[in-house]
Image 1 (cartoon, one colour):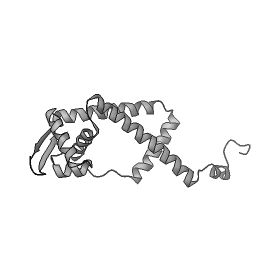
Image 2 (cartoon, one colour; image 1 turned 30 degrees about the vertical axis):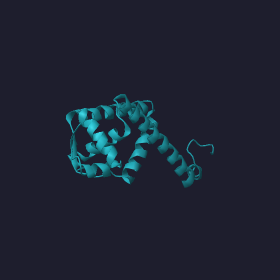
Image 3 (cartoon, one colour; image 1 turned 180 degrees about the vertical axis):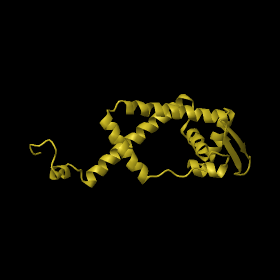
Image 4 (cartoon, helix red, strand yellow; image 1 turned 90 degrees about the vertical axis):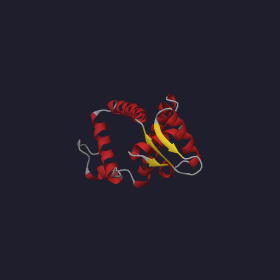
Length: 163
């Protein structure tokens, strides 16, 4: 850097990371973020005696926001039919879903109950508290950089329209 407090354009350009190292660092951070968030989500679900398949089904039903056929649940949750049927029976027994399952053919329907919605709301609130704690530990400059990065990601990966 030259003697002035403001970097020259050449110095600014030299400080810009090249694409490949930036992509590697971005991938590393995303992996850690996703793994950490999933670990926290699964731990919170386990505290409520929910397994992976049950959590996937509850979240799939929540995203759909309406009654779903068994076929759409299998497709949306990316779980085998046997796991979906078994999980729906257990979730219905716990009052978290309302399910009508046919005994001998693949038909059936399911929807979240108010208790199921409340459970997912609690899990979401716990997740938001963890993220809020992370953000609260950042100074103003870091929060600004985080907001800028999120804005770029949001533009690149827009939200799917909700039904």
